[in-house]
Length: 57
Image (cartoon, rainbow, N blue to C red; front, side, top):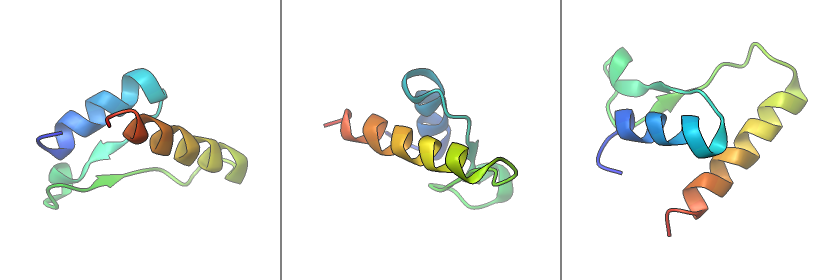
C-alpha cells in the first residue's frame, strides 16, 4: 500500500470493513475505525482487517 487512502479502499472490498483514512484528519499513514457498534462487531472487523492485511503477503 502506498498510503492510507489506498489501504482504506482496499479494506472496503475484500474485508468489507469501512475505515477512514487518517489523512482526512491530518494524520497520514493511519486510519480510524468507529467504535459505535457492538463489541463483537468491532472484534469481527479487526479479524477481517488482520486477514486482509495478511493476504497482502
